[in-house]
Structure formats: C-alpha cells, structure tokens
Amino acid sequence: MPILEVKIKRISDKFNDLALPEYKTNGSAGMDILAALDEDVIIEAGKIDLVGTNLSIELPRGFECQVRSRSGLAAKNGIFCLNSPGTIDSDYRGEIKVILANFGKEDFVIKSGDRIAQLVIARHEFVQWNVVNDLDDTQRGSGGFGSTGV
Image 1 (tube, rainbow, N blue to C red):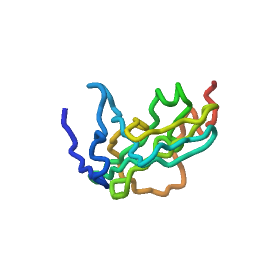
Image 2: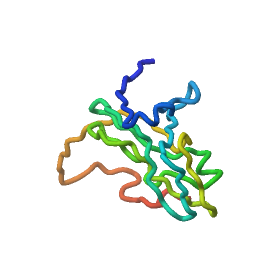
Image 3: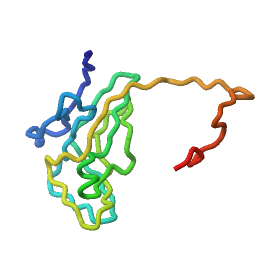
Image 4: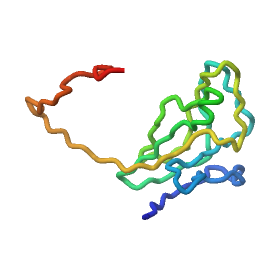
C-alpha cells in the first residue's frame, strides 16, 4: 500500500510531549488528533468552542484533510465536530483547530492531550464547469429531501 508523506509542524515547543496524529488500528481511516491546551477548556452544555492542536500541515495539491468527530465522544458525551467533516485545504498553513459542540446535557471538560477529533486525508478532483442547456434524464430526476423514502 503506498504511503503519502505529509509535512507537519508543531507551532510551539511547549506541546512537544503530545503525540502527532496517529492511526489506532491497522484498518483505521482516521487518525486521532489531540487537544493542545495551556489550561482545561470547559464546553458548556449546548455551547461551542474552538480547540487548538498546536499543529499545522502542508498537504500536496489535490488532497484535503477532513476533520471528523470521534464516535466515542459523540455517542457517550454528545461532543462532536460541528462542521464535520471540516476541510483543511492544501494551501492552508495555519493551526488546525477543531470546532467542538456539546449536544450533551452536562458540561464537558477537554484537557491537553485529549483525543478530540480524527483526521482523514482524502484525494479530491478539480472541476471545470461546462454550462449546458439540458442534463441527462434519470429515474430520480429532481426528487430529493426524502423522495426515495424513509
């Protein structure tokens, strides 16, 4: 299996003890990414917070890094990435930050080193639009938003 090499930078040396994003099993598509915090962050029930990771990356053109929720945090605590999947574009060089929302009934504490999200690196295509007067007909047509049933 080919391996894509991606440049990664720690923004501050004070979080050098935190692991880089890593796969937890041989079959994992997502790599866990950790919170890098000077002090705990309390995400109140029903609220949103932006959590830093102290990392920035350089992706090759034609790739994106998707930021996704961790299923355990979502199922057990109602903590999820609000715009999941969020996209880190190949030309972004700023800190990876994770938008976390607390849909749970209780406040949730994030500590430095906590696994807060997962990253999936994905290839994407570049598109050139071709404006036409008609599109091919399909069985579905313009049906959407539940048109195929529950």
